[in-house]
Structures are given as structure tokens and as C-alpha cells.
Length: 347
Ligand SMILES: Nc1ncnc2c1ncn2[C@@H]1O[C@H](COP(=O)(O)OP(=O)(O)OP(=O)(O)O)[C@@H](O)[C@H]1O
Ligand SMILES: [Mg+2]
Image (cartoon, rainbow, N blue to C red):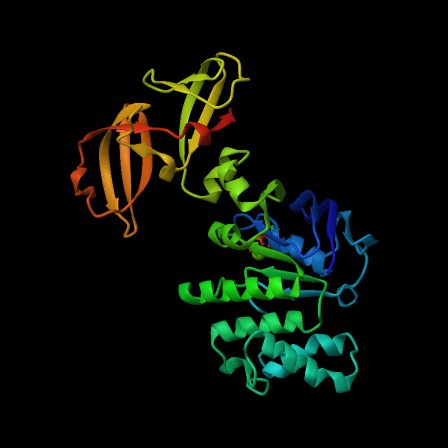
């Protein structure tokens, strides 16, 4: 178990700056996710933590120790790669034993350690099986066992669920979460799937174009994103352009006035107001505005109702209660925007 500190980490591949000045602190035993779109530098950051890539600049510390120049085998880090990277010509047991041999662990100790790791991931008895004769989910667990067998202080998981079907993703996600909690290993979890990051992380770092743009607990970054880009990436969102008229009051397109939960912006300032579809109240007593229903989509548990008021288009998400047949396209509905949960982004 270890705390991890990154300070001013930069990684260039020729002209490409893959990671651009990352500094962050991860606590002992924390489940820390790196979330961001494809190509934003997640894998590169993980590979630097493992020691497979050397930063162009900056330092990495495990506890108080600077490990920047230390080789991978000497870092006591377990990694599950984006594509598992299992050795197809080796058996399950040999795959798991690989890291132990590389670390020159006493030969006589190896079978027991492999058995224990297989047990951890619920694959007891499969040591002699060829890797090619396993399902995708089982291969994923072998990769996890291979990372855990060395009893790492830090576990690095690079999109470990990306090759699994929807049901197996949920099961495996729960298994990883349970194991992480049981073993208490400081864990970096890389994903581009916001749902995965939101459900299991203690904290999330959101990456864009090599930069870490926000770090916070899942609820915090979901409801208080620092930028429109983060809000958009983390889930469905509405954005309306507006202008400040005076302290705490903005005007929306069409002249609709809206109280906003921020009173330090000067009159004339252009802003974007962001809010989540499920937070819009339909048939409100004290409505913000009246809008016309222009689309209804049944989603099973919920219904998406798209509304329009002049130039403003608002997506809403309402739990499906069965009696919503009363709303039809063309209806005019009083709606209320969520004052407390309006996010104000300066332009
Ligand atoms: N070995 C390399 N040589 C040159 N460029 C690289 C190398 N590895 C990564 N890059 C570039 O660095 C950037 C970040 O890549 P990285 O693999 O870290 O992204 P990622 O966030 O893991 O993306 P994904 O979600 O697609 O896996 C990309 O532009 C990529 O093309
Ligand atoms: Mg990647």
C-alpha cells in the first residue's frame, strides 16, 4: 500500500505531447480513476506509473520515495493492460507465475502464490488450462490474478472491462471493487466510460488532451463540473447561452429572466448555463418558463421529453410512471429549472 504523488509529469512522443504537466496526489488504499476520451493520455500516465515509459519531465513518488528512474520489476506495481496482454503460448498458471519469476521469487513458493491468486479471482483449478481456451471474462480475471500475485503496493487497471459484454462488465466491475476493498491496494483505474468511473471511484481525475482538468469525488464532479467540457463528458446535459443583467440575474434568449446561484458576475457578461435533464421539473408550481413538447422518447425506465421555448431547447428525463400518456407533442408545459443545480460557465 502506498501513497502516490505525481509532480509536473510531461510525456512527449516526438512532436506529440501525450501528457501535459500532471500533478496529483493519491491516498493509500484509494480507488482513483483516470477518466477521459480516447487519446487524452490515460494509458501513457499508467505506463509511467508502472515504469514502462520514462517521463520527459517531472517526478513520481511512491510514499516518500522518488521512483521516477526505477525499473518496472523493482516498483512493486501490478498492471492489467488495456488488451490483457496474456501470453497465448503459456498456461493460466504460467501466465500468473511470470511476474514472480521476473522478480526472482523462490521457486518453491511459486505454486502456492499462483493458487492463492487464482482463488482470489475465482478461477481455482484452472492453472493448467491454455489461455486460449478461456472466455473473455476468464482471461480478464487471469490478467487480474497476474497483477495481484506479486502482492503489489499499487494496482494499475487500464480499461479492464472494455472487452466484456454488458452483463459481464457489471459482474467484473463488482468483483474488482470487492477485491480492491478487501486488499486495500492503492488503485488507478483507467476508463473512458463515465458510468464506470462514477460508480466505483473514491475520486476521479478528468483528463482532456493530456491535461488533468478536474479532480474530485464522483458526486462532486458530476454535479459541480468546472467547465462545460467536463459537464458534457460526464453525462447528459443542457446548455443555454445567457447574459448577466444584474447581480444574480441572467436573461435567456427570448428575454426570459432567470435567477442564478452566483452573484459575482458583472452586467453584460456572457455565460453558459448548464443543468442535467433529470433535474428539470415539469408542471412546476412556480415555473421558470413555459415550453412546448416537441419530442417524447420512451426509454423503458424513463422518458426523454424534449421541449422548446423559442430558441431554447431543453432535454428532460422523467421517471416513467405509466400515466405519462397524458403528455403529447405540441402540449405547452410550465417547467422549472433547478436553481441550486444550475452550473454557470463564463464564456
Ligand atoms: N509510443 C507512442 N508513440 C507515439 N505516440 C504515442 C505513443 N503512445 C501514445 N501516443 C500518443 O499519445 C497520446 C495519448 O495516448 P494514450 O494511449 O495515453 O491515450 P489514452 O487516453 O489511453 O487513449 P485510449 O482511450 O484510446 O486508450 C495519443 O495521441 C497517442 O497517439
Ligand atoms: Mg488507453
